[in-house]
Image (cartoon, rainbow, N blue to C red; front, side):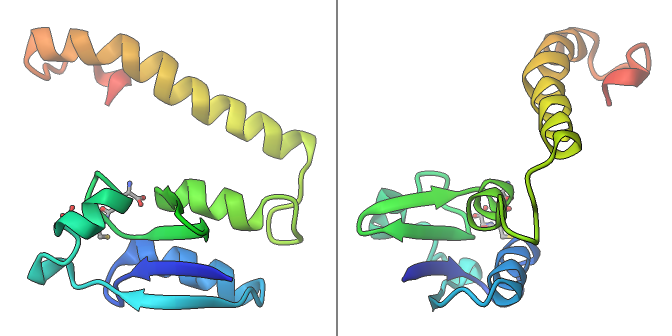
Length: 122
Ligand SMILES: N[C@@H](CCC(=O)N[C@@H](CS)C(=O)NCC(=O)O)C(=O)O
């Protein structure tokens, strides 16, 4: 069974709880109060060095962070997110956006001080 570290008021956590509920996937929820620093304890940082929720334990000692990665992990190939050519294309575009466009634009934005000269990179 999955173990989900999340916080009730966290939107990123809610996305994952919603998907798990729609999939009727059993999981154990562990509430982490980020405002009390519970995501910054040594124990939590050992599970997720970014110190953020949501965090899914997919198997004993195996952790997956990042809400969208978790969503694809739990819902990919299910009726909630069936595999299809258009979905694969969407992932292609989003991967290109982050590793291609963003990587190219960031140094330029940094050098130009976030100037309006690079409106397409925002
Ligand atoms: N990109 C991450 C963002 C996660 C995130 O921002 N989590 C917030 C709660 S919604 C958090 O844990 N903040 C605590 C912190 O950064 O110290 C995701 O999509 O999961």
